[in-house]
Length: 441
Image: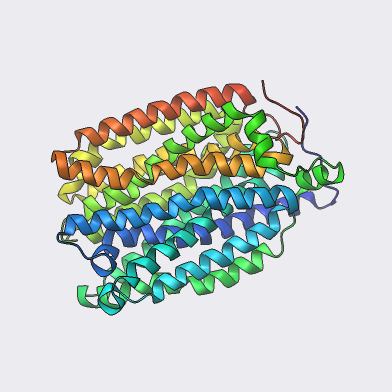
């Protein structure tokens, strides 16, 4: 394995700081836009765009449209990965922020079912798919820019910075919806819920300003100068590293299940059947998201020091423990139970897993296939996890309890843990990101 070549610029430290700040702010904007939809799906989209015979059916339909964005993510990852490995990271990152912003603002302007009938859910799903395409291309490019600029032994820490964009975006989105939720119900359902989506038009401008100042990074420039770029990088990755792609997808499934189970399905349950505990649930989630902004780089540093495996397995264990208060006490509207649950699941559990997965996946593949392989691997696992809220809501309705949901979550956590062990062993987790050597063993 060879290390990433040093950048030629004498102010390498300044370049690295600019990349970290830029990738974090850009990712925050993308995740703010993407997870606005999850909060809206749990609280308002069902009755406004997907009317049904019962509130439960409407909620199931809303979660189904939420999953549509995740289904589109692998396609976005495939397209962005291919061109990111062929022409560079920067161009794709600029395109993703424009696409995400346009789709999010479009949702905020969309007429409801009562106004345009069946076209309302059709357009809603279309815009959600565009969001999925954008975030599918965003994640791989952002984390690779950070990791490829990292000095040896700091890949996990650098990779954790764009990962902070997720809790930061979730925090900002939750703050925005919490503010809108203080409106009387009539105003909230009439126009208040749209405001967080429309704010995205301002964020797009900021995102473009940031992204246009980036470069493709030393690792990609090195590969291009040596003629190592491939015509079909994804095919090459599938042929050379099938085990790593499968293991990485399983690890991503574990992280995605934590997110979707706690921030979508449990948020809906915690809000109560008529939304009477909505403010309590949103406050608890907001506190946990703010905590994860701080815990993510701390866990990234810990991954560099003691290895990905120990940190990420501890995170999965914390999320599993969070099921106890989450399933037993949160549905009753207890603020204390909700805060403890979301802190344990998101700030600790998801923070540890998510901080490590960027560096772990990036160091699993060489530069010439890295964008394609990392995006495909991550998005496959995340896509499967998107169906967790739908499955959980259906099981809770049919069984009348949460035992089956807990069993499925624990099974997924165990599979993800096994995958992390396999992947961490195969890539020597704290080594520099590879630049071109075939590393498969």
